[in-house]
Image 1 (cartoon, protein in one colour):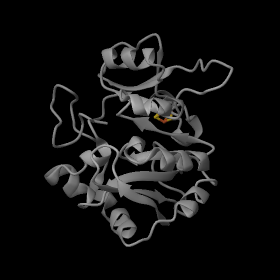
Image 2 (cartoon, helix red, strand yellow):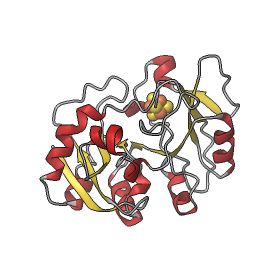
Image 3 (cartoon, rainbow, N blue to C red):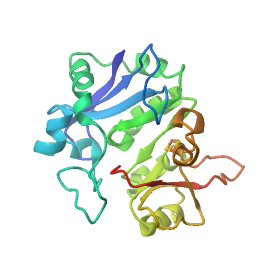
Length: 233
Ligand code: SF4
């Protein structure tokens, strides 16, 4: 089931984007994440594959991510963004035909853990919309590339700062984020990091849920940040 949660101007570049929730009745066969509700942010200008590889309209939702196919270089990682934009054509087309229903989208998130940012940044939608979506989920994972912007600091309690170097990880951690870092084989872990349990023990995201930001509250969140081996994402 595909639900268009919201459509409106991107906070990144003002162009039209949409937030799309996908919740299948049958269990997802994604081996890494396991069965999760998926939330993606798309440019409405073009199909995701065209936006990412031809027009660059993915900037409206991906922002400054250096793995965008139009800007990626080998200095950043071995491969560009690994997200399978080819496979999102049907999801994008279905959502383009729908009207907005934020209430239904929020309601669809109660049954399973939620993978926010299946594609795109949560910060690309209005904060009020992002907050409604987050309220609907009791368990989630979320990654944010626009972690350095002052207006996105509130998201550190819900999202991992997506970083691509030790320097970026240390900077984001000093700003109060937990981080999610791509590292090459042989590159050491920081003291503040652990290796993704999927890579060490085959634990799926739906059961692990380490990537849900830095918890607020009286108790300090002592969980480590996460590193993964570079797979292009
Ligand atoms: S640390 Fe856990 S939640 Fe994060 S990517 Fe790895 S398995 Fe998924």
